[in-house]
Length: 214
Image (cartoon, rainbow, N blue to C red; front, top):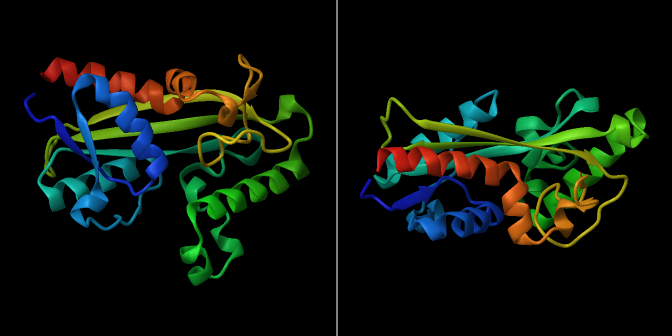
């Protein structure tokens, strides 16, 4: 595969940094869709896979480049798999549309975390009842009409803490407890998180598939 430049179909700077870091050693250059003035696609799918394909196809069509889309989120067992595909906008129903749109990503993350803790606190108080998993689906399209997209699914199992801890990561990382390290995802080093995470797992699968096509 000669094309080493890939457009990332996301405006999430946290995801961009992680993907750039993980793919840099391979020679692939990940460029944000914002550099091409690509608007966000309407995520009308009902699953991580559907939404990732929608986003990748949109970015590839606008830029003419191979596109990589990540659709990921947290699934909490006691909440029936919520927030799931709505992870990034879980608390949006608590605000006016304009108010939510004007909020920084950090404030949105805080609101999402607070809603999750409030809802989970009513259903599960013991750690054994607070099982959850991060899911990441990565979709790679060689072009907008690629009939055989590469689809990789990574899963990271853990539990939800009673309170946030740590300054690293983004999203639900401060709440996601990693049993083998006895700390939250936000307290892990970037290197450790990348090695363990749902996104790290999905990227390893993606690289293996890209190398087959090289």
